[in-house]
Length: 260
Image (cartoon, rainbow, N blue to C red; front, side):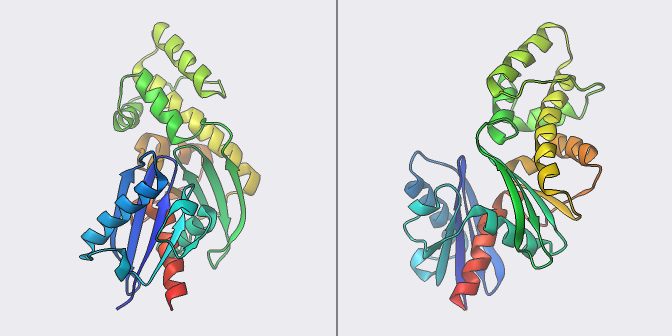
């Protein structure tokens, strides 16, 4: 029996995936604590518990990834999230050639070859616009949860136009739109449209090749996926696992290769 794991400590969440004999045995997602070390320990302990393990010492190999990968104390190796997302997406859907990863504080577009290797990527980590943090900030202005923001945007008849490239200015723009009497569904759709437009600009830099998949927590937003699909004019395939664990899954797949 071969047990390996991948641990992805990102900017807002920690993810862990355990593979047993090449199949997903368990996974866990938690909100990050102030300490990347603590986040890694908590998420891996819970994933191990779900897998029926007493601790990480039963794992043959662990690969760490994400912003906090250098702080994962039990990792045998650290590999970039770009590589891990490519491997994870290819493992789930070998036909994927383009990945849009929408993280908490950055967004990436990754181009893959037929073997799942990264051939190009572009990343926006200088501004929260186009990320999960942006959607969270806009949802707070509307006094909605992220799920509510997504769902209500589907009721829009005419999405509002939000032009600001800065999250702070976008908040002011949203407040102005509401004060002008714009309907909340239209404003919510406009928020998702603004994110989609920023992602589209990144996609254009590397090109979009089918099949295309979206990773990260924001991939669970039906409102964003709907508008993004329309803007890309290309179907977005649904991955057969939680899209938030793709990086950790890729790390686990790489760990399996290292463990032999």
